[in-house]
Image (cartoon, rainbow, N blue to C red; front, side, top):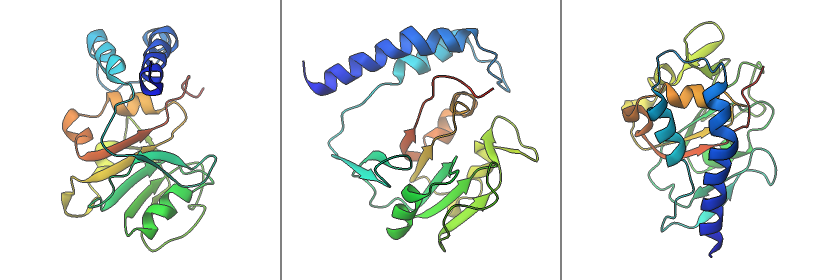
Length: 187
């Protein structure tokens, strides 16, 4: 069995054994009803996918660094919620000329400054209010309604609600999705 096949098998087992039961029993806040089959379909589709692009690490060696397909040519915009105190990933993209939209309510300013950074003191979530912003609302800030973007999302458990409340068309605007899934939603 190849390393990729083993990783894919392990990921599916993890989703079925730990993530799926928790999601189905949790008090996950959703703004619309999500049918059980729709959620199961999403969870079954989440697994590693082989591409003809090698993976490259962008950002630091620890938190703030992510493996992405070496397919960044033409990407003009990155949306990156959950920056907290690390913006190594976003700095590396900005060095390539990619405009980065950052959001995190837990900090007053991004940890580093760059002319290509636009920061919102908001958490990404399922509502629009003083603390949260929906992905759809946030994407309206992209220049020229761009459809060749990257989403890098590390939002400590809130990623489930954001993804389940996003339309397929909205998610299709991203060529690359980098999502760090967490075992539990924050309390």
